[in-house]
Length: 114
Image (cartoon, rainbow, N blue to C red; front, side):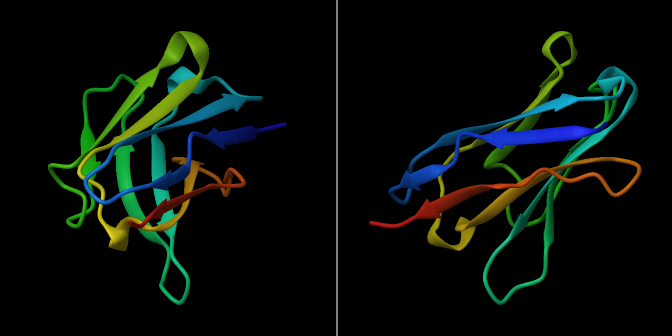
């Protein structure tokens, strides 16, 4: 069955960096685009970033453009989210999603606070 497992979240000060990972299993990872979303308390789930199967096409949410970078390593079935210059508004649960089908990970908490 499809599984997505995120890791790498934590507590970081404003201006700091984190790298999130999402390891996929149960499907041909290299054939699918992948998304990162985030969910903050009281807010709608927001698309953060997208990467195409061959890593040729990228999309970013307006609020993270220029600060976050999505990448993937198909050999190890993993998609990454490098987050730089973090702000308190980036505090959320970050989830990865396969581009098709309702397949989500359980999420990893990112808290940006001094």
